[in-house]
Amino acid sequence: MASLDSNFQELRLRLKDSTSLRNTGGDPVYYLIFHPREMLQVKRLLRVWRTQLTHDDWQVETVSLARVIGDFFADHPLREIWQDGEAGASLAEVNETLRAALVDERVVENALLERLQPLEAQSHGLLLITDVEALHPYIRMGAVEQRLQGRVNVPVVVLYPGTRRGQSNLSFLGIYPEDGNYRSIHIGG
Image (cartoon, rainbow, N blue to C red; front, side, top):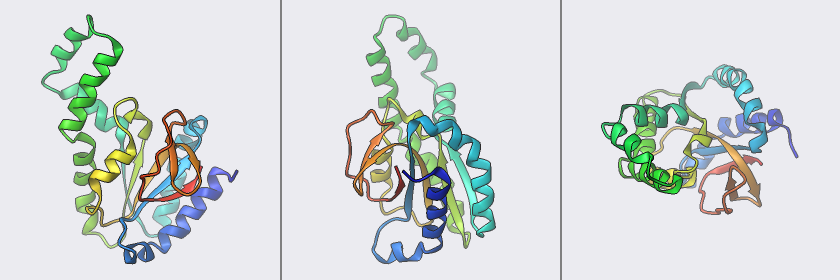
């Protein structure tokens, strides 16, 4: 298994050649896949990786899905109602209510599109998505990627905690069933 550093170096090389992906009609979305037990190490390396990408002339914008989801729930007008209803509900019911709100209001997709728009005006804009584990148990990144298909015009790097089998079968957090519907480029795992 390759190290996090060697996988990141491969990502850097692929980003330098990102124009070839555009010629095939795919969105420039890259998953840097790492085992869930490496999440803390990835968080420690994040500052170094951002610096290296900046040295490669990328204008890096970082978005934390933990922050996006946390802010959504903290500021939602139904927050108190959800909290009151939590007392008599099962965990599955609570999670389904919160999942429905995230999906129906397209929270993650809208946050990403909001961050992508100004990057499109830059010659070397790049969106770095962190804290993907915050999507659990509500949605998976593959579903978000599908909803954004055709709307991504700058490279997007997803720091993806999971496992990989073959070229495209990913298991989110290593606990979800493998999903081969990802259209992105996968590195690591």
